[in-house]
Length: 241
Image (cartoon, rainbow, N blue to C red; front, side, top):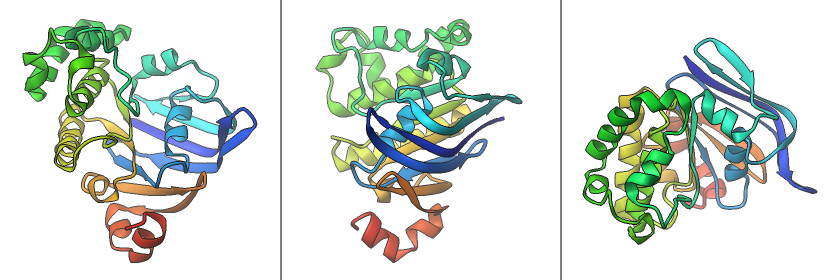
């Protein structure tokens, strides 16, 4: 069982407060999406959960296998060691390392090390282009291939919860469609709990169980994917559709 509860979270950068009293939940096995345009706090929330941005109030409680931990104040390495993996915005690969070297770096979590061969084989099965280019430098790959590598690298840590930050940024529409479908496949095969920040509303709701719309650092609306998709006012005024 894996779940996340973020309650009354306040966070930002120095004197600039970005998140204002944010409360969300991600239940076991769900795919939950954070929707909204750029600059409204989606990435800040993802980074706060994984310890890359320090929050000043509230709680971030992760429950895995019956043990609950408040992630506030924990280091990113400690959070990853609990079974949380992040696919960061912009991929953030090691461009001068090969595809395989980037994947192996993702397996540094102690609990993932016994499964390196199995996870590597699965990543190559899921993304055949990574097998073909395992000796190629990551920086020489296309944007779509790099996003595949970033996803695969996260899976190498054998996570229970996957945080995905803006997977569609910089990708052609047909590649975005394939990437979203692949995220659904990975979630189902691995039995993951997923929280994804995404501004592409149409694609995100295809795989979401529920969603939150974040506006100016506050949760403006929440509901099932169907409820959000059927609400014309939400699409028009909050998502610019």
